[in-house]
Image (cartoon, rainbow, N blue to C red; front, side, top):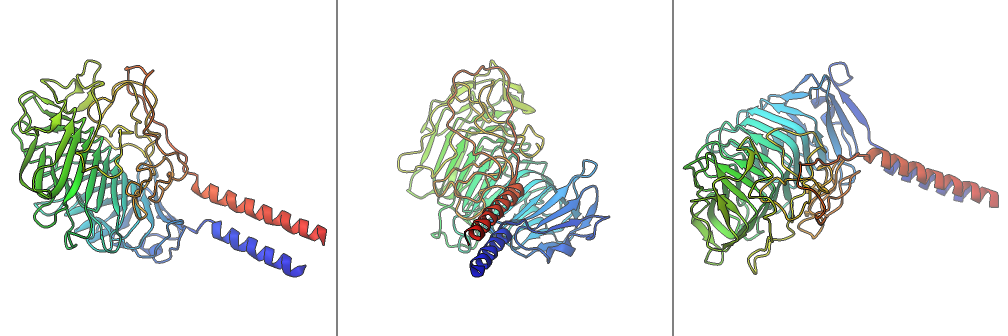
Length: 521
């Protein structure tokens, strides 16, 4: 009898210990720990570091103690007087060297090489600002890097020259196969040089961002550097973004840059692209590439001039000939180099924006309203697990708070471009969580590509973000009124509470079991 009770008690304690929350470390001018570096070596799975805002901290912090997929380590900035904590300086201001971390609520600046160095797997960076970094704002290493979720992050005044970029991401296809770089709800602008977003990741998911003001490309999605080309095919899904070209360079380069090519598939859907008159082409197709598809986009030159749409003289098509599909794209009259395989093209002198490049949302009279259609790939070149219809609006050239991304309403047929006109049921709910980080992406494994709202984001595989609900892209949309855009709702992020509640429940069950056993004895 005593043995049974002892075993039950030990089991209950073990289960309770397994669900208990990790330690919390407080960092700040009035806290026990004054600098982030003092706690970096103390961390274990499930731990939380809370960093007081309205204060500055010394950079050069390396996080090399791993969390776990089920118990990530969280480095959380707490706003004080409305200000995030500022971590500044050093060669690498913050380095994520170990797996399974969430960084949120931080301001990173002044790194002489990288302000955020991504050197690990299953990393989330959200609700943060990266600025005034002499070279790279965020850089992912060619070796050891896995999946990264970047959401609600503002990046500006980083990069320089030709080789340093505001965001430069890569994944290690040997150490972390099927990794995903997902960037959503971000605001990237006013680069000092280079590209705004350059990625060599195995799969890119670029959703609902405002990207503007690169010296070269706003978006460059290319192949790995140093990996065997036949190891994996690199694909990219680009949906619901605003890309604004301040200079006259190309807007996007797909395929390669002379040092790494993808022979991959590219999908470009419901984006709004604004160029300068006489500028370079929107799409620069370069080196090895398999297929490209463009659907429901808007291409407009400031002032209403023609747009140079596609340049592909540098492309090396895997099949030996161009594979380009497209439908229902709008561009200004007189635009050049539209692929002959595009169908349902629309053109005119004015897309009917609220205020040109400043506010490219459609008005009631816009020719973009209700003009969306199918988004079929070229036969035999189907894009794997695409996002489908966009779920959210991108930020309107300003960073939004976590969970406040405006859900894109479903009202009749889909409008062209990144914004929907009207009110109706939202396709998305809140716009946070749903991390692509955590191994094989949900999109790559047939799971839901976008996750829920709220907490730390779910590991890939289609699970919803903690405390949230997965957005549903399948809402059908009649019955709404084309009136004014409506907003989405946020999530709760109740992860720790849920774990503690489950622990208490288990403890209660075991206590009842002990009482029952004792009564029978």
